Amino acid sequence: MKVAVVAEGAGPAPRSLAEQAYHLLTRMITQLELAPGSLLVEKDLMAALEIGRTPIREALQRLSMEGLVVHQPNRGMFVADITTTSVQHIYEFRSLIDGHLVRLAAERAREPQTAELRALPVKFKRAIATDDMDSYVELDRRFYALLAEAAENIYLAEVIPRIFNLHLRLFFFISSRGAGWHDVAKAHTAMTRDVAEAIARHDADAAEKAITAYIASRHQDMRDLL
Image (cartoon, rainbow, N blue to C red):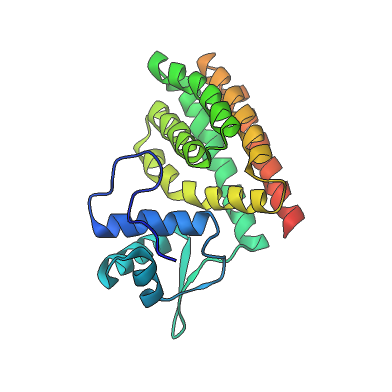
């Protein structure tokens, strides 16, 4: 099945074929269209995406750096598997990074940032009510981008987008084994509301508690599934 060559979500169109390939492959991997552990065959991807070999190779290299693709010598490129160990590492890292991220955001956020953060839960709820999963994902990207902006730390701003897709794939993994993405999204929306309100109050402890409790809950969901 061919995939339309467009960017995922509501953001601006990618500026190069390599960027288009990256966005399309990211979507296919995070939403489990390309299953964990599956072999990535270049000619099949070229046919599906209608993009040439070089841009696809560049995209695969980028995804390898992000941990969504792994290279096995003499075997080829594979979608990274989802294992108990990999999940533990992801959530341990997220608990540390996200917790520190929201603490800094609570200390440093300016009024326009807090206003936008507080407005996001309503938008999340609207996306759930209209079954608009793509908009929900883009709103989640914006949530983390806003946190990174508010934290005013260039290194956090670099690492947050790189780990976003790892936890997004686990979001879809949990959703695919339950009643759908809505229940998981509702819990996530409640977390964003609590974090936003804590940041608006400049309450770093409450912001960290809200996000780390959510991460721990999702980690337990994954342990129950694996």
